[in-house]
Each structure stands twice: as structure tokens, then as C-alpha cells.
Image (cartoon, rainbow, N blue to C red; front, side, top):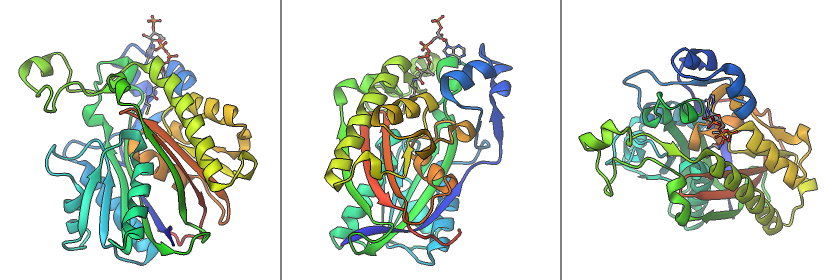
Length: 326
Ligand code: COA
């Protein structure tokens, strides 16, 4: 028995912000951002648009594509509309799913892979038959647009899949999984204030500590190392080798990170998928947005791998199913 992907949906804000637009107010250039990250532009939600709005739009598309309803909703996000409650129940209600089991998973940029594992667990445990998993983020709300080292990296968006029960080996079956974390390194990428450790008091706001801060160089190094090791583990677990991987769809944080991961694994350039140029790093939304853009063929063996704040990392494999359009 397995959790099988039946439908896919996405939503991104209309507003496109180019590197040149950021360079108008920041000491940066389009060339610097493109060469260091591969990012050309990102989408930014208008004031008043929240994570749940993007999640509802992507979720509705996934449900429509699958032609099914869901009896559980899992939202992978680290940018919920409010710090309490999570957005899962609101998204479920707005999608007309009533009083179903609904909650959030916060594993930062690894959230979608963790969410797939949670969805698979809900189905395997007979807790739900059909799970709507949405990776949804408004990273712009925790981005300090006066800090050039992070302002150029992130974007907003959402991507969703509907999973339901199927047989192991079915096209679309997700798993096995490798998931991991290193809490000793949590300070490398965090929003220092606004939680229970340090509330968002006037001092924290003045110091801009309610925005995301990062040691970019160290995060880069760890991201490569962890995604390579996790990918190798999950391939071993699945009884596959790198030669079996038709497409590597990694978390879209930085094209250079994705290339370094693929080089070390030995995945040929034509088998890597990178769309970070269009959206920047959309955290938990990046993998489903990439899956939607990748023009995957039914039957292709896809390796998913992600890394993010926590630190967290995770990988899984899925033989791509034939999906109806959203
Ligand atoms: N424009 C121009 N210069 C910039 C800049 C920008 N947007 N951001 C940083 N710089 C400068 C730095 O200030 C530094 O200048 P200095 O040498 O005078 O101090 C210089 O560029 C080099 O900075 P460095 O941090 O070493 O650059 P880098 O090659 O490591 O690239 C990142 C920076 C952020 C692109 C890179 O470290 C990275 O991608 N890290 C991972 C980030 C990530 O993906 N996080 C999410 C993971 S889920």
C-alpha cells in the first residue's frame, strides 16, 4: 500500500519583481544575483494577500485536476498567516472540505518532502484516504528588503498535490523517504525574534530581528553535503542507483547548489531540473512549483531532495504518474 499522487496545482502572485527592480534600492546588480544564485526574478504577493490565499488557489487546482475531494489537509509552511492558529483548518474550510483533519508542518524549505511523508503516514495509518498537501509561502513577509544578502533570494508561491491510496509500485507512489535534522545548527538560518524565545518587541523590530537572517556561506556548504547524503540514502533504500534517476528535482534555493548536488551525485546536466530563475527560493513551495514546470513524462523516475532551516533535509523518489491537467 502506498500514497499516490493524483493531481497537482500551483499558484503564484501576479507581481514579478526582477533583479533590476531590487537593484534600484539595494547595493546589488542583476549580474551578481544571476551568477551567484541563478535567480532572475521572483513573485511577491500584494499587501493583503496571505499564505492561505495562495494555498487555497493551488489546493483547488490540485483537487480539480485529481477530480477528488480530500479528507485531510496538510500545509507545509513557515510563513503562516498568523502565528496561531496554523493555516490548515482555514484552507480546508475555504476549499469546502468541512471539518476534516487539517494542520501545518513547519520544516522550512524541506517542508514539502516532510509533508509528503506525513501524508503517506496518514494514508498508511488509515487516518485519511485522500490527503491534500500544499507547500505555501509568503517569504516576502519575513524578508528584510534592506539586506542585500537575503533580499535577492526569496519569493512567494504555492504548490499542491492530492495523494490517495494505491498499490506499491504504482506510478505516482511516493517513498521510501530519508528525513533528517541538525538542531545544533539552527542559528545559521532563522528569524531571531517574534517567537517565544524573543517576542517581537520594539527593540527586536528596530534591530530588524523579526526578519530572516542567514550565514549564507555555511548554509550553502551544508545544503550541498546534506542533500547529497540524503539522496544517496533514499536511492539505497529504494534499491535504485543514480543511473535509474531520470530527473533530479531539488529544492530550488540556488542553481549553484543544485548543480553541486547533481555533480557530486553524478546526475547528468540534462537530467537536472532548475527553475529558480523564475521564482527564487519559495521554501516549501519550491518542489511542487518545480514539478509543475518540469514537463515530466509518465514513468520517469524522479528524485526529490530538499534542505532548509532547522537545519532539516529530506529526500524521496516517485515514478511520475500520468496526471490530468489542473
Ligand atoms: N549583491 C552584491 N553583493 C552581495 C550581495 C548582493 N545581493 N549579497 C552579498 N554580497 C557580497 C557580500 O557582502 C560579500 O562582500 P564582501 O566580500 O565585501 O564581504 C560578497 O558579496 C561575497 O559574499 P558571500 O556571502 O561570500 O557570497 P557567496 O558567493 O557565498 O554568495 C549567497 C552568497 C547568499 C548567494 C550564497 O552564500 C548562498 O546561496 N547561500 C545559500 C543560501 C540559501 O540558499 N539559503 C536557503 C537554503 S534553504
